[in-house]
Length: 295
Image 1: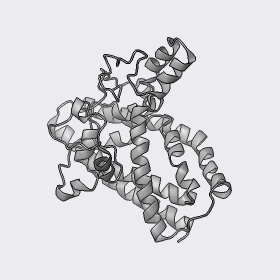
Image 2: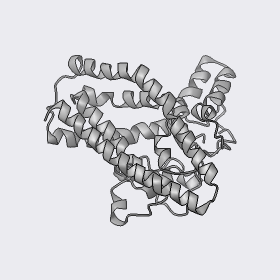
Image 3: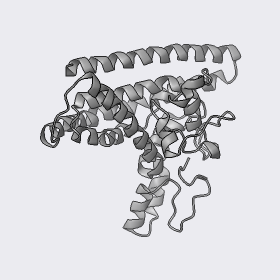
Image 4: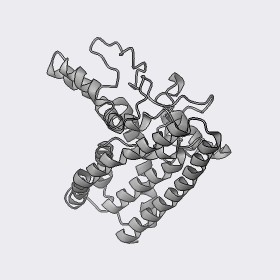
């Protein structure tokens, strides 16, 4: 296999899931129009979710392009060996990208600075296919850093890009309420049911089901939760804005206030790197409600 073939395969897989997502979107819009239940709110929420792509793609163009160049430099200078691009290495990197995504995702819920970005994805009170592209502006920077170990292990940048693209593309179809539980597939794959749990703001659903393609890592590492009653979506705190700019930067004001009020540099640093809701005296912020997530 060649690098071009690998990237072409990633593109085709991405396009396939995009078509699936587009079909689901059309059904969701038709359902909203038919029911006439808060249709204006639903459509506007979709618009706000899509608007997050504006700052996200701007960062992608200006910052991550240079970051991708670092992958190639490290691949040539740091990796002790080069893993050949074959069908087995494609499958292996996909497995490793999936477990990398699990930990990248889990850490983003537990480090407040990272949560300022990932909270954007969780901030919608609606749950529809467009939620899948609702990203914080700098979320891709953390993803870039999280996958650096795969480069050091000797995987070619094209292989790593393939894994990242496919894991993210797979999740396109997860953001919907149209698809119920899928029987035996629920035991292995991440499904819309499992991912609805992940977006739930109910206490029993907080910080669960981090998986990308598979749900195996959640089962292995104790973060799995089956969907029982329908989740209440959105942030745990009272956030219901549909102002795009407010959504893009929803978590920054509180973090800046906390850091400005810190009594030392160490305390200011702790506000950034400790879990959302952390306070110096060990108490959680009462409005944040979760020991692991300030949402």
